[in-house]
Image 1 (tube, rainbow, N blue to C red):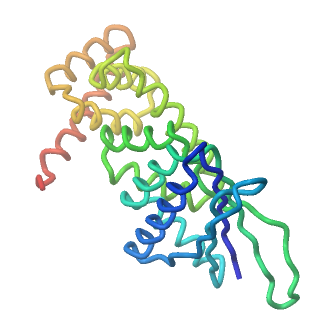
Image 2: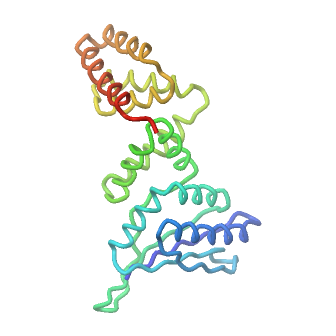
Image 3: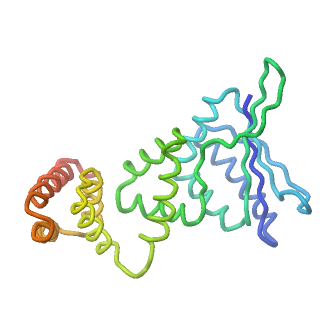
Length: 243
């Protein structure tokens, strides 16, 4: 048996709002096919203001629950709103071994720390690179503790703090990202950001000029390879039916 318990400490005057929003979160969980869990109101003195708890029969059920909620747009919106109401939260997962009836030490399940910067980074990353690419990256990281830290840092810092800065337009940041990645020979990431650049308004003509400019400073083999890579992305975009 696995028990996940999340404790919320509300901002001043927001305890009732946290309770109501946690109830809303449980309704959203039911809508996306998850157990609603149990909600308790705390004393608000020494302990948390609100506690949510849910029991799972085995580790696989809990892991599936994490994957579903972390790729659900509805639940992501709920988490984003909750972050505006709380000072902090603590999440623990406990395992009760039925064979020995022994209580194991609480273990933290692999999970993203959904800070406001992380949530902003997820939204911006999806807007630039597309929902499918980002959700695939997040789901893979959620299921593998080795992948999770770099996805947390990339999303929270790279996208939520740097890409979200007001000093440059998204189009300019895409232009720069493509230039850097092409110069570094990071071909997979270059292709990903070519798609992002198109989403951010970079035209094919501007992309051609970027690659030619790279040829002057990085060498024509780099420009030739960049042309082939960018062309493959453009052909893929054109062959994908619009929805």
